[in-house]
Length: 409
Image 1 (cartoon, rainbow, N blue to C red):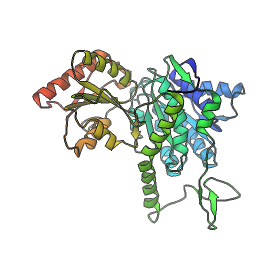
Image 2 (cartoon, rainbow, N blue to C red):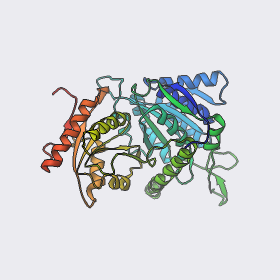
Image 3 (cartoon, helix red, strand yellow):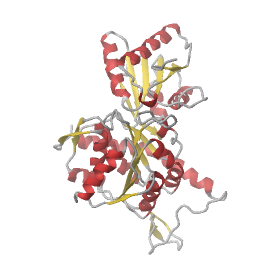
Image 4 (cartoon, helix red, strand yellow):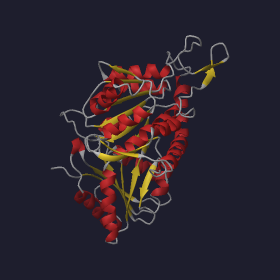
């Protein structure tokens, strides 16, 4: 349990993110507004205007510029934050790879929103799933409280010397971004002790002496130079090594924060819910997990051994943890709020199958594409998924591996 007194505030998900950034002593925020992320940077700009933070806030002309400025500010040693979603995140695509390749620990909040066309401003995960191979750590939150907590953890994770990777924290558009919740916030001084100052690692400079890994006229280094076949491969391998170390860092930071706040989210990588003796399990990301937990509780009262596995960290992908959590389940439904067109299922489905391929006992797996463009996913539809899992477990057969649920066909 937390030993520190916390204040309860009524905050939307966007406001919870902005408040966390306010407390984290950020040096630079560069942003371009896009619905439904706009409230994050609007609220933070008010903190700057009111003198509540000492942050350089820059309104740029596009999301591409927002991340370009975030990258360059981070390269000078600054603590940096930005936010985006949907088409804005897509416009950043090139610079996402540049940021991770330069090992710049930028933290970015993403309000997950469908990609055009047709134009849609509501939630699905197509925007961030597109960027799953961009070299960023990805964390998906269930509610506004977790959005607040995860942003604070993200700075520690990104800036850790064993990772030095950018982090994006995802929250569902409107479902979380614009919905008011009670959020427990830590005192400013407790946050500042937890987040601390950015610690710049030392590298070997061109003169053979240790220098800070940042752009500094007194100790000149080059970041992101032309890198042909003689060294490019090795630099990409280093990014993978950082990703391989990231699960430990994520869990350690999560556990330290849990001791401070009294709140935990599984082990920081996955959050199993009533899975210990489950025969049936759903797997999902984001806010849908909250509704699914309610359905699981209802089924348990009826004697159905149902459970849920929520993926909190999607990159790095917690393969071993997923395999261990689902090892005794008979049937698994993977819920994707995005789709890989022509690829026989959604991205989460593909990777859950991959994780379980080498499992000693392999459960039956079925994929449900749901909620595209903000389509509601009520408990009745989630109940249908568990009913289908009961049928699969009984017949020992999956008739249709990939299905669309909640859509007119």
